[in-house]
Length: 128
Image (cartoon, rainbow, N blue to C red):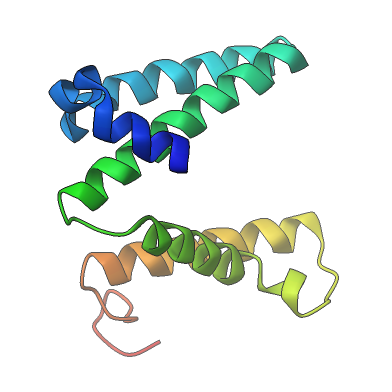
């Protein structure tokens, strides 16, 4: 992260591009990751994941500079999502693929509802 931070501090192109300018770069790199996955090109996959990780780090550093959030917050949220979407891993509990998928989608739906300010109610308005 020190290298990325130095780049963000000293590279005029990064400064000029700004945080808003990185969306398209991230889409482009994500598409390159997908292509490497589809073609089973391990060497290219490593390179493209590195590019995507670099962009992620740059965006995080720019966000820190703009006092939007800390990179640590992003990492903590990612950990929380892993734990909520795959609780069985941390409970040393075996589940079927079907159950794992069901748990993952249920957690994702719950996150979406919380994000949209909807409590855990069904459509009729009663508590689940």
